[in-house]
Length: 278
Image (tube, rainbow, N blue to C red; front, side, top):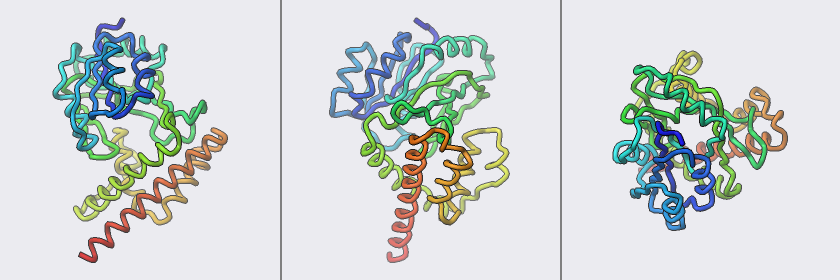
């Protein structure tokens, strides 16, 4: 048992994946499940496992995560944030504890590398964004952006050695496509809002920013201005990032990401046409 870290798991109808996630953090004596009023057995399974459950009506991703950060009564000052389809391997656990013990008062967060899997295949090369801030000092972090939310930490962020695992296709391709169909509508709206608001994106920050979240934000903003994005994304993933080395899984993932990109383009055009008609 590690008595220095609380765990937060955000859920919505996660009866399939939640037990595995809870099992991977069984070393923690302060597990919180923040649920968006699931209509399956999510709440029951969490309570049976000894987790503390709080429910809130979902409005958007950043608001939901911020509500969990602000309103729950955590036992410890450090918080590990997970989704139900993520797992903490046993070898990462002592690294979490050591990182906290060695952290000075100026450190408020740790960035951990995530391994995405398609089936049993680790998308080692195909995965675009492998680093995520998931271990934070309580009350020193806040989420921004409604979709593909970004966490901002007040103090310094350090990189933590080791991996945690993510299974985005655990519920099948249909679930992934349905979820990204919703994401694409939100991304299209966000893109339209940024364009109309005169948001400017920096090539310098996209290439050289030391803040990974800021770097990805400006990269995405500039990428959205390019023509032929779905094809460019597929080529970037398969050739430049060498997703072909991940075998069949790498090609599948690159193709699905390109489809997602095309969804965003179509929905942005649809929004623009509606505005022009009104």
